[in-house]
Image (cartoon, rainbow, N blue to C red; front, top):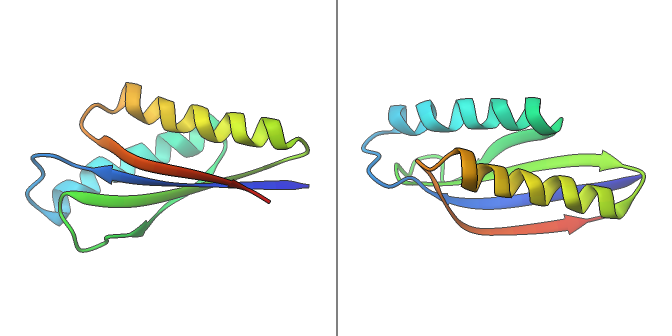
Length: 94
């Protein structure tokens, strides 16, 4: 069994409240779960309006498959969620 995790640092330009941040992150995390069958959550910067750190994980039998799924999820955020900017991301495979 291979476990992969990805931590993504996001910038939310123009956001002015925690409520606005939640309204952006909640649908994004829900769609990541549904589109890629990942576990996803906000893991840091909970009280910062224009910044978020999210993490998602997946499990598979092949390390290449794990890396591909996580990388595709990051690219999906960049393409389909222009309201957020991906600042940095890191994948680890165990």
